[in-house]
Length: 195
Ligand SMILES: O=C(CO)[C@@H](O)[C@H](O)[C@H](O)[C@H](O)COP(=O)(O)O
Image (cartoon, rainbow, N blue to C red):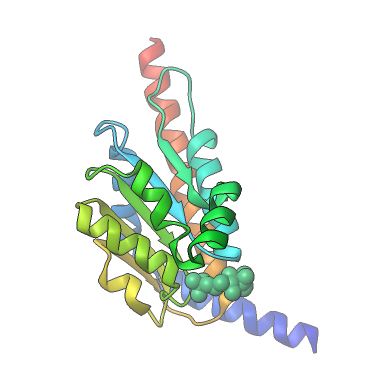
């Protein structure tokens, strides 16, 4: 039983990875890379498994890509702000836990990245709407249902699956493929600066 499910999951995972649009992933990479020169801040958000993936993105892009002498990314996961999230959730509404944080932090030139499987989590949708109204750049990585997040995005990677495990795996795959390449680029740049 387990082996048959394992093979089925693996087949779905491989099919989905092969169907991803590399042009969109490259756009996400370029947007993140260019943010240092443009002095843009990046905020990442999501719920549940995607909340922990948002934290993982912020860790890999905030620390993992760093090389001495190379300008660092300004990236923060709004899901790491536990006191703020619980206060807004408790005192106002769970749907406002991200948008209220953005009201303190977001500038019109900044970038908001939302991770979701349904593409329809209300707190992420509200944060996207606020970011869009302010003129910030909005990026989503969503499952095949797309939800309202895709329509609010400047760049949207639609991951062609409804399986939460597979889509959440792809959130991390995209993080790792971009951040590990960026680390290599930064190492090249760091070596040139050291010459
Ligand atoms: O990790 C999982 C399922 O794999 C769950 O915790 C899941 O992330 C939660 O149900 C989220 O609330 C789902 O939100 P979303 O990805 O659809 O925006």
